[in-house]
Structures are given as structure tokens and as C-alpha cells.
Length: 427
Ligand SMILES: N[C@@H](Cc1c[nH]cn1)C(=O)NCC(=O)O
Image 1 (cartoon, helix red, strand yellow):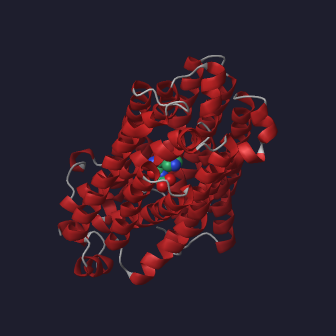
Image 2 (tube, rainbow, N blue to C red; image 1 turned 135 degrees about the vertical axis):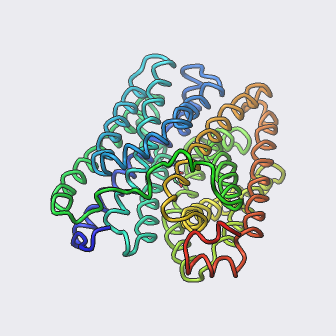
Image 3 (cartoon, rainbow, N blue to C red; image 1 turned 90 degrees about the horizontal axis):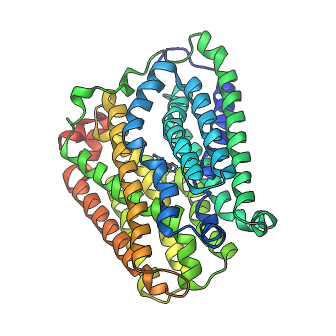
């Protein structure tokens, strides 16, 4: 980090541009769930095909996200944000305008190739401008605006009901317009970044984020618990919330599309406010692992409430909302405490590789389970295997959180790690 920093006003301007770019990107990410039922009715897509439209986002990133991190280090956050936003826009357009499933799937593939590296580039952008001052809060806020995009996608059947009345395509054209907004914001960020970068006010190289291949697997036990938890928790929450939950609410709880989308969206809306608030709270209290364990426990309880009781969907929605706000708010700062600072990039890259494999696999497996059991409005019991799968994975995630707590998350570990980041890895 250079001693001089960009002016605060410039930092916040860049923060706003990056947050806007994330908003559009997360809207597109979550744009498939609301049209899942329409794709089945109008284009006769199976659940496996719908699952594949989201899985194919994750699958290339099992490898590419490692390359993406290196490219961000080499070419800088602004350029990579711009380039990847353009790739995402092309992918969203291809998804919306393709006449067949293969074209749509190719569009989602392209979007996925751009979007995960875009995620790293935007984190790096915030680190460039807020390193050493309000970094966690700024990252929490940017993530929160991204969640607002996910909320918008879920609310879209209500907000853009006329578009949905015309069929599956107009909602995806709207998603393309949001991808264009994301590209425009990335362009504005790239433009605003030129001055401070030329003036030498930004880091010239992020060696701490560079991948060191020979060190790739040399992390402490606690890190591996966190990685396993990241895979299990994100696989359940994203495969369920972003792909199958709206359909599940429609078919098993008798909600119409707009109400099901709204119900799903409240999880994201809660996260908009709660994610930065929980991050702030953990920083104040100085404890992470207990909050993480609590957040992960909420997920299996929510799934059990949905699958096994006749309770209002509100109960499960509140529980998932807590989990979805708390776990990401704690996971990324905790990761920085579990590994040495100069290996943080490698650690996140590896976590996202495994996370993408998990999300892709969970989407495919859940779609296959639904198809095999004939899950539909006429056969709501057919969703039971999918819920059992998600329930089991989320319980295993909680077990990993407990193991992490015992290994490196006791008060003495966390106090020591605060004094010297990365030391908890030894615990
Ligand atoms: N690797 C991303 C996956 C993602 C989730 N939503 C959009 N992309 C990630 O983990 N991001 C952090 C997050 O919690 O959104």
C-alpha cells in the first residue's frame, strides 16, 4: 500500500460505482429462478435443464477462478472489472436472446466465466481504495448492494409483472439491461481510477493476492474446516435460494409466482441491512467462530421447518435471512484471521474453486433428484429427496463450523489472532 491514499471523496465515488456494478451483476446471477416455471411451461425444460442453467455458471470456475485472481493481480482491478463486466453483458444477452437451450446455457457459461473474476476484481477495487480505512465496512456495504440486486431479481415478477405476463423472454431482456448498467458503472469506475492510479496513489501490485502454486495446500486445519463449511453452506443456500426455492414454494406451499418470488426476496432484503451490521458487530465484539456456528445452524433448522412442518413460510424465511446475512459477514474476515496475510488471495481463490464445484454439483444433483422423483405441483412429495439432500449438507456445514470453533475459534485463539492476523491458523 502506498503511504498516500486517494481522496476520501474519490474513494466513495469508486465505492458507489463498484456497488452499482455489483448490483447489476447479482441481478443477472439470480435471474433464472424467477423464470424457472415459465421455462418449464413454455419451453418444456426439465428441472435438470433449469439446474444446469445455474450449474454451468459455476462449473468453469472450478478452474478459472484461480486464473482470474492472477489476472486481477497482473492487470489491476479497474481493467479486470471492466473486461469481465463486458463478458457478463455478452453472456446475459446470449441467455436472453437464444432460440434454444444450448444457446441459453452457453450464455450462462459466458456470464459465469466473467462473473466470478468480476467478484474478485471488485473486492480488489474496494481494497485499493479503502485499505487501512473502513475496509470491512466498505466490503460489507458493497456486498449488501449486490444483495439488493438479488432482491430485485426475486421481486421482478411483482415489479415487472407486465414483462412476466408476456413469457420467459422479457424478464431475461430486463436482466440484460441490468448487466448493461453494471458495465456502465464499471466503465465509470475504470475512468475514475485512471487519475489516482497514474498519481501513484494505489497499490501497484497485490503480491499478497497472487497465487503461489507450491503453497496451495499448506494451510492449517481450521482453514480446511472453513473451506468445507464454505462449500457446504454456499451449495445449499445458492442452489436452493437461487434455483429451486421459488418453484418449491409454488408447488409445495401453493404460492403464486409473484408471492413465491417475494418470499424468496426477503432473505436478500434482510441481508442488505444485516450483513454490514453483523460485520460491524463481530468487529466490535472481536468474536467470529461462535457467530459463524450460530449462522450455519439456522440453515438446517429452516429447511426442517419448511420440509417437515406446516408452519408459515415466514418462520423459515426469517431463519434463512439470519443465516444468509451472518455467515458471509463473518466468513471472509475470519478467513483473513486463519491464514497469513500474504496468503489471503490464495486462500480465497481455493475456497471459491471448491465453492463453485459444490454449487455446480448441488444444482445438478438437486435437479436430478427432482426429476427422478417426479417433483411437480401435482406431486409435491417429489421434492422430499432434494430437501433431505440440502438438509444433510447443511447439517454437515454446521458440524464443520463447530470443528472450526473448537480448533481455532475459542476466545483465546481469536484474541491472539486479532493481535497477529494469521496466527490462529496454527491452532
Ligand atoms: N463466489 C461468489 C459466489 C456468488 C454469490 N452470489 C454471487 N456470486 C461469492 O462467494 N461471493 C460472496 C457472496 O457472499 O456473495
